[in-house]
Image 1 (cartoon, rainbow, N blue to C red):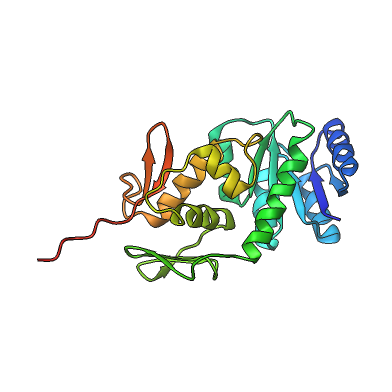
Image 2: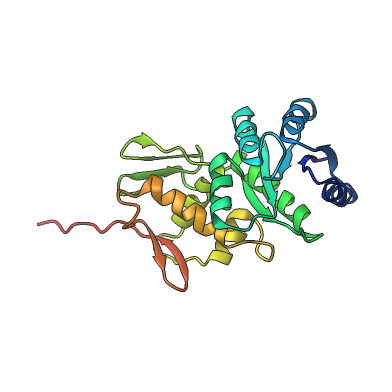
Length: 234
């Protein structure tokens, strides 16, 4: 049984989400503040933590950072905040996913299942042993990537996104397609997650992120990983 820790200060929302998750077969622990949530994390050792951002005391961003420092637990931010800046800040803090309130009854369990699938796939990678794009080398089996011989600090989701694009070089992939193939959902997906992760990847793999040459946007269609142009030999 998958165990979930729900950190939410609103007692009504906490009770509603807890009931929803238990009815879907999850084992649920609850906390009403950041401090209580971190203490409950140590005692419950959950598979997934759901974190509200507007918590009393330690806010959700700091809770997420502490959870990420503590280990490889799945973290989903569940917040009423809808701004892209909040999504970016949450992902930078270490969240795996971001879900806005109000939560649709089928959506939260679907997101948790997708997160658990991604975790399993990350632990059992498949594909080529090494894929090279100029000085960018991706090693799906090892779960690593490097540029110019320097190891890149990629999250699990960033690596899966990079591997997915690298599996079809030069092929344009739409945002909904990437959501389905990388995050494991489409109908419930927020395509801003794709845009945010592409931006974070560009900052790590491009020589000039403001003028990307590898992770290219195809306006109105999506993204592609463009193989470097080979210089003609004299």
